[in-house]
Amino acid sequence: MYPLNLREMPTTASSLFSAYASFTALIMLVKSMADQLMSLIPPPLRSYLSSILHHFYAPRSADLTLIVDEKCGHMINQVYEAVEVYLKTKISPLNERLRVSRTPGQKTLSITIDRNEEIIDYFDNITLKWRYVCTEAKKGGGGPGGDKEKRKFELTFNKKHKVEVIDSYLHNVLDRADALRQEEKVLKLASQNSGSSIDLQHPSTFDTLAMDPKLKRMIIEDLDRFLRRKEFYKKVGKAWKRGYLLYGPPGTGKSSLIAAMANYLKFDVHDLDLSRIFNNSELRRILLSSSNRSILVIEDIDCSVQIENRKEEKSRQSNTNFTLSGLLNFIDGLWSSSGDGRIIVFTTNHKDKLDPALLRPGRMDVHIHMSHCTASGFRILASNYLGIQESNPHNLCGEIEGLIESTEVTPAEVAEELLKSDDADVVLEGLVDFLKRKKEENNKIGDEGTQELIKMQKKGSHPVAITAMMEVEKNATMEVVQNLLLKIIEYDSLSSPGLMNV
Ligand SMILES: Nc1ncnc2c1ncn2[C@@H]1O[C@H](COP(=O)(O)OP(=O)(O)OP(=O)(O)O)[C@@H](O)[C@H]1O
Ligand SMILES: [Mg+2]
Image (cartoon, rainbow, N blue to C red):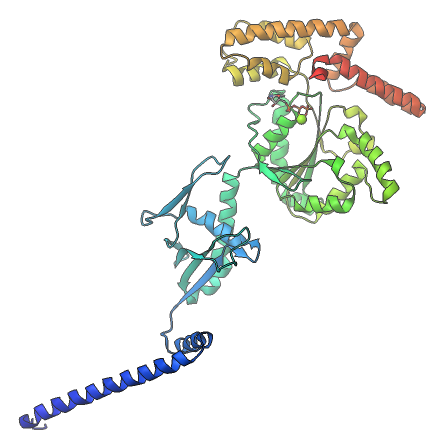
């Protein structure tokens, strides 16, 4: 025990106070000297020194923050895109500022968080904090396209989870975003040669397509099987691709079927214009730039005659050229290395004019004949355009179906008639008149033989072409074959004069 000397107390307090005052004065002096000293140091060095001091003296944080910038140089950062999609599903009532948008073709509103908003996410007992940050881009250093803002997401979590977050959580975010995008996908219609793409908003679906129901079902099952068989293709060492040949007269729905397939599979459509490609390296560039899970479309390949001509023309200038079957081999080779499903669709109005090498099995896996309109096709159109159900048909439906079965008319022509008025009575009376006129025209063109040809063509074979093939087998001269081909063209144009005039 020390006795308390009360008399000395004030002295001790006042000396303590004066010591504290002189210490504060000293600190102020040191600080002002340090400030003066710092002001003598050039700014870049000053900030470097203060960052070093901060590094040594700032308290250590238990958190780690990952920065996900929008761009990597001039390229879009795929992680950023995925996070943007993923976080849309994590918005909570705690968020106070949200952004709303919708782009053409998008079915639903898109809601994202505004700058500086935070989202808390949980993964395997790890708490993760996302924050959306926008800063002004440096002068002249705006992003590509002159963006004035630099956008990024910051992901903060406890350091001890670094490996799990990078190896598992972020992969989970990428996968979820892929699945969400697939659900929401706005299909693209890309013109390969121009390199540009537009949103595919073709409304055609398998429901709206007027075609034989059995054939429709067969196509849907074929597509489903193809999608399921990724591993199978890998196992047997084949490129995961399927080729469809759609053939039939103009206006029978070939392009509509392609759109229906794209909408069903949620695949983009890449339209390849062969007449504007002159060599393999150009073709390679175009094909490699096409997205995965896409449909590559080459329309009107019966114009391959022109390709051959162009080939001769070109080969005079250079040695680079290709034929359609060469093209298919090339595509096979190119796509066998990519692990994604691709569909290639060729269309033609004249299957018979195609190079037989193209029709060999393995080249085009499925041949689909798009026929003139049938009674069942009409019923689908009547239901889509006028809401007439099979169970409750209009009294003109029977007559129309009879006329459609006995004349050659395309679904496009029938659809055109069905659009002419909102009144079903008016429209169907108009259609009866149209079909009668059409029948008379067809009758004028054809005698009994022509009718036979029409019937056979409806079944998908072309009698004139069959004769041509027989002549070829008998070693006919090229001149004979060419004459027969001309006859086919003549026959086809005579059998649908209305279409030729359009
Ligand atoms: N089978 C069909 N089912 C429903 N609508 C059809 C069908 N065929 C044609 N149509 C209608 O006619 C229009 C033209 O058809 P589409 O472009 O699909 O024919 P196409 O066979 O591709 O013709 P082309 O050989 O001239 O390219 C379509 O937009 C659609 O409205
Ligand atoms: Mg078409």
